[in-house]
Amino acid sequence: MSPDLQPFGRAVLMLGLCLVGIGVLLLVGPRIPWLGRLPGDIAIRRDGFSFYFPLTSCLLLSALLSVVLWLINRFRHS
Image 1 (spheres, rainbow, N blue to C red):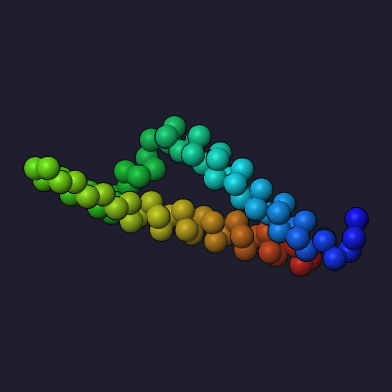
Image 2: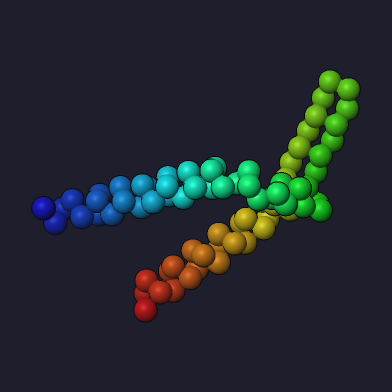
């Protein structure tokens, strides 16, 4: 394989891993009963209208993803 294609190969591999991770979350997500129903998640229901924004769930997932990416970055440079 040409050394010029190594960065492209890594990018395709990382994209594939990200897609696998998203797929796993979509399959496992409905089985986690508390995800999306945490205190602080905004749900407004009126006649003919509903609005839902999982604020706390988004913050929790963001913090978890930040820690995971920090750990990956830390071990990659060790």
